[in-house]
Length: 433
Image: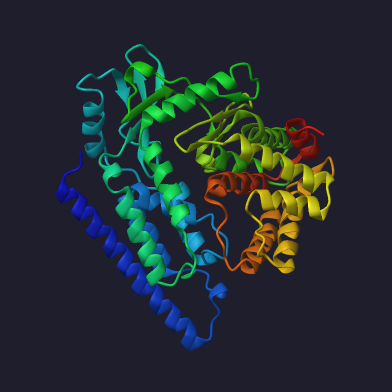
């Protein structure tokens, strides 16, 4: 367990980071005011970069919140801030091996099952990092190690971040985000227990046992516990790098076919999780996906898996059907059932909601849709901002937060990949006609 002195040091470090961020943000706001420069024209924010660097050093809930804010829309966070915080998704720094080895030894209670373990991490995130290793049995494995003591700082981290965002006037001052912050805290505490993640690995592996398109690594249960998770090593390219290598317009016909195949798998996986699985991996980070040499999609990291209740799944299915087959009133009725539309909302808000849903469902109007250069994310964010503004920046229901995050994240991945696929057929297969 983390010592009280360590807790105080962490709190002071976070407060220094946040205080420096608030001061710099205030200075930038003053400079924009004096120069008459609109906020949206600022390409880079020194305050935001300082915040991203500080959160990366701290890890934990503080960094996780930064990652989530990077996916926010303009109504919540300005673009320069989103751009800076997005670096936390793929450029997180790893802790040195001298810090990590004692954690592994403690988690394994002195047993050392490795024939070899790479001291350099292959991936680092907010709660831990991953090392490649070989067990004495000969099995190649991924060793996910949790940073110690984070569970004691979750609540204070989130509270301090909320305070500085309010002081720096970065997020709307009159909007109540209590439910959202509580939801973040709950999910993050779940992520910190690798026994929960192990459970979801097994659940997804059972779901996709007979799949020819999706692979889930097996967990080495005898060496996995709440602080360390060991799973079989799967060779492949992380989705971000795979997209970079396969997204050019002049690639061969085979690569175009592979791109379309991976796009179809990603989209079908999303709808399978929402409408049939009852669970969804809510973190859309491309580092959580690998493309194997034989063209399968490997799913990694199930710490942020959320259960979707039956009512939510039914409502999402009805909303999808209303958008594809129904009328404006049908869409609004489902929106009301989901508390996205309230009785007090005026016609402007209702129109904005319908327009937002029209853009959301655009890929499914016709059977073939190309994500290449469609600018769907940009247009959708404009509609989201219009709806948010018309409802006085009212946050969506907290239960939709992580689901919407995954939906938007998948859309962004598809737009970067640029596949041409039978999107309408894919969704109809999952929701029924």
